[in-house]
Image (cartoon, rainbow, N blue to C red; front, side):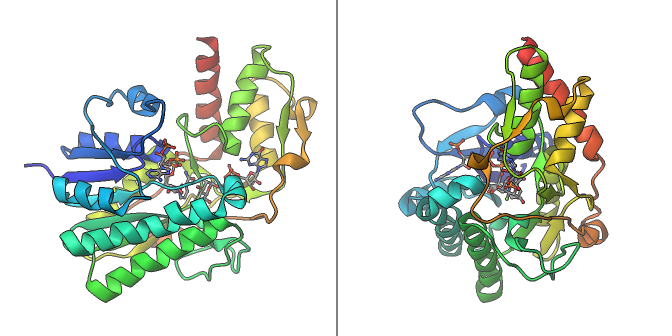
Length: 322
Ligand code: NAP
Ligand code: G4F
């Protein structure tokens, strides 16, 4: 009998890639999705797995729902990928962000403690927690300095995951993942916003691209590789926390420059700076040190910055051509 996994946030970028990985490993996969007026199965369909997942209504706002779902499935592993995950919106919706991204994790951890403390738990922590960075590069020992309601919420969830591990012996791991992108990335995030605009501009469907802070630097990796690290964390003999990153950093400007140049265009002719996209507080520089993950999990990134940009631009060109 294969293992049983519950993934929250199944409709998101990472949910889709992780589900595919676990199915390929022989898991039975349940995917928790919140109720929306439109079914949002596009990413699962893109990977050809929408009819292989057992979809189940699950909203992190609702404790009774969480308890019944976990009791009904009795999973071996729970991967918590659900969140209000867009930093910019967290400034406008701090309470909702805290309810889902912070308190939602308390609901899950306590349900595990109540129903079956042997369930292994993965928490999707974030490099945003490093915020105004205290060391360069950032590793598992770097002090946190969150700069948005999103990051503050993730930090609560991160420490609660550690707290349940230390208090109740829960097999709870926190993956501190740096930005990871792919053709399945949401359009609101800067990488996909750029590659989608590049394709549209190239095809004559759009004239300009309005962006905020072009100097912010991120450590951008490739999402399908990052979900492998999530899986590996839950297969270890002891629960622990790991930084997952590429160890390279590039600015938003560099991303735009490379994406436009891939189709023979100069980004300076199309990118306009727009204060609408400037955040009340910014994370200026992220660069991760993944040496612990390399040593303990045997994980390391293969796809680097220029390859990532190319994958995303080519995908969006194909999509627009269709
Ligand atoms: P994403 O594409 O935005 O997916 C987020 C998922 O959470 C979606 O399935 C969304 O459902 C679901 N969700 C939102 N509110 C919910 C609620 N109240 N109850 C249940 N589900 C809810 O995010 P992602 O890029 O896959 O990231 C996965 C996780 O990793 C997130 O927790 C994110 O914060 C974290 N993370 C991401 C990165 C990154 O660079 N991608 C880096 C570090 C950490 P809908 O489809 O209905 O909106
Ligand atoms: O693509 P972003 O919105 O990603 P951000 O804020 O780094 O957050 C992502 O990565 C985190 C991991 O560090 C995750 F936890 C989180 O869930 C999410 O996946 O913005 C990247 C940078 C920022 O500095 C932003 O100010 O790009 C800058 N930026 C400049 N112009 C823009 C834009 N960001 C967006 N979304 N849209 C713009 O027009």
